Image (cartoon, rainbow, N blue to C red; front, side):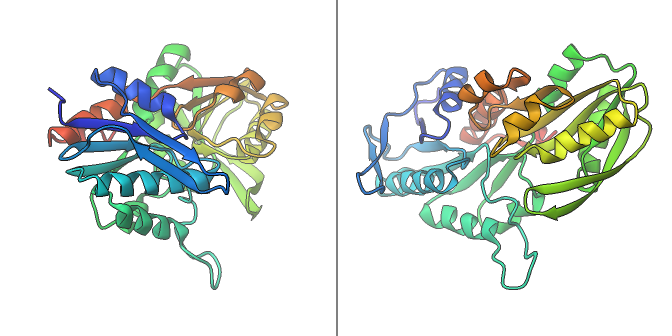
Length: 314
């Protein structure tokens, strides 16, 4: 049924690519992605892709530049091997936070990366929880931006009682996401008011909403250095929250993130496997990793058959 589909992966997240293949009942494509002694990326495709519908699974997570180059070179190799259609499956889109000019003479790197992906040969992009929705408009090709909400919702409904629960947005920009999540689990909503002092730095000011005596879940799209969620958990505990957990799609977890989480008020950190976390889970027992493979595999199947993907945008 899927004889013209081929799925390949770079080195950023081969485990997720393998899970997607398992769900679809096909084998992962054979490709060597390595590095020359001078640091250049080397790619060899070890099977015929002429006339095939090719999907390349690659999160552009740390090391971001290496993973970006692997994705670009893989797509160029597929294009030159006469693949019929190339879809870049990017569970985590690096540089997404550089989506606008925040200072004079600053770049818009998210747009630059979009141009590079298009030029390298992508006919379509499948992403998950883009940091800013307008990034879809940076591409001149179709972009499907899926959400991990169904995966996170399913776990929260099974593991947490909606009674006495509050869903907390870590900033005003995430209120819409938190409100929709709270409605689906039957919880109330609160907002953390914060002031950002600089890149990867934030200072929590106060809590908007009632969290006293409540079990709260901070909902965000990503956790990078964990400064926001840890300071948020401290502020929520000061305001009387009896339990604080964190839910996020992308676990970047750079710099001091693990140490901060381990020593924080946070009970559990629920994230997905858009970024691989095999080593991190050994260092942080608070992490709960959920897989988005089922969601992505269904989107890949629908794209292959030219079916509607819109029902997955929830």
